[in-house]
Structures are given as structure tokens and as C-alpha cells.
Length: 300
Ligand code: GLV
View (cartoon, rainbow, N blue to C red):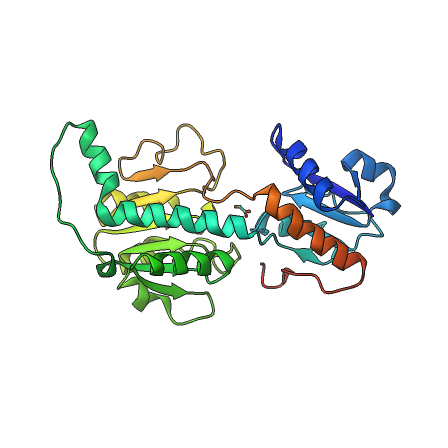
């Protein structure tokens, strides 16, 4: 089996993936982009992490494109992506668990006011605030995919009052009206782009908080800053941004009511993800059903 491995990998990242994939799929021969260009007829499958646009065209034997990323919005943006080849998202159990941990940390910190205490420490201010119980905190999870469900389950276990919403589900506004904390885990599609805008923030109760762990383009940055500056929103925990890395001059960096993470809420774990990818590649080449296929029309 000849597999193209390509993407915008960091320094050691490519090597880590190569090692994990070689263990999970010892029968495969791995090609890089130059190797695929030299022998386009040989490439039977591709394992990709946000590959440069155009890298998957002109491969006549390609049977599966397996993403190492859970979110495939950037991959699907490539207009040269071969139309007839199935695309699979990464569904990595370790990644779901990591996402649920990050969400729990954010909710716990917001619920108990730990971000506020960190701010007060910098001002040498000794001041405790009222302590609410977990079940008095309504958390709305946007997105009911693998990560949304894992997160909701974790928060329920911890005693929070959890509500869920998905794009084609119940109307959003009444849920927003009851949400003290909103966690965004939606896929980025034309329908969800810019969903977190001024109207969205205005529908929340005063002093609500948002946690964006999905994609930066879900948020209208200027509207979020306005809602924070007016005091309408209490805090925002942001892991994802319209431009990444977040540019040094962006107001989110130093905003006292924003916590910035470097797109690290849940990183794909090569140890488990390589096993998931290997099972899919074997299935595709044996003509069997492939898991976690993307519906290109729907966008995820
Ligand atoms: C991370 O954001 C991913 O989509 O895997």
C-alpha cells in the first residue's frame, strides 16, 4: 500500500507521525509530496494534516483521503480536492478526552471565578466572591459531535446543568437566554461561520462567558471585544483564532477578560490516531466501509 503523508507539520511533528503510522500500518510505503509527484499512479491513499492546496490532485489511484485533523474546513476549502475520493475526519478518543478536560478546566475556572482571582492577585487584592454550586451553572454546549458529546458527559459528571444544541436542532435563542457559559464545539461550515456575533452575545444573560474551542471564524472578533468591553460578557476563553498564530498586536492577547490558548485544547495524539487512520486505510483498500466519512455538502 502506497500512502502519501503530507501537511503543514511542525519541525518534529512529521517524524512523530511517520513513526506512529509505521507501527500502526507496517505494510504501507510512505511517500512525501515530491515522491507522489514522481509516481502519481502509485499513490493509493493520503494521510493529511491541512495539506497545501493542490497537493491531492492528479493522483488517479487515490481511494481515501484520511485527515489527521478533526475539523476538515481548511481541507474542504481546497477547490482542487478530487471530487470522487472519500474524505474521512479524524476521530481520536484521546483527543475527545483532552477536549473534555479543557472544557472542564474552563467551566470550573469560570464557575468558581478563578480567572478573576488571578486578575486580583496581580493587583494584590484579597477579595473572595460568592460561591455557587455546580448545578446552579447552566452550560450550553454548541455541537453534538464526538467532542460536544464527550464534553457534555464530562460536565454532567461534574454536576453542571448541561444543555446541548446542534445546527439543525431546537432554536438557539431561548437556550442562549439561559446559558451562563457557552462552549463552542461546532464544525466550521458556511452556516456556522460568524455565528458568535453581536446578536448572539446580546441573547445571553448579563455576565455570561464564552469558551471557543472550535474555529476562530465562528466568532466576529469586534463584536466579542465590544461585548467584553461593555461588561455584558464576563470572560472569554479562546483556543482558536481567525489568524493563527494569533498576531502579536491582536487585542485578545492583553485583554484582561480574555484567556488565550495556542490552539492546544485538544491536539491529535499520534499514538491513538495512527491506529484509527490505519484501520480506515486498510478498510478503504479492501473495499470495506470507511469510518467517519465527511459529507462534503454538509461541510463536516
Ligand atoms: C483541531 O483543531 C482539529 O481539527 O483537529
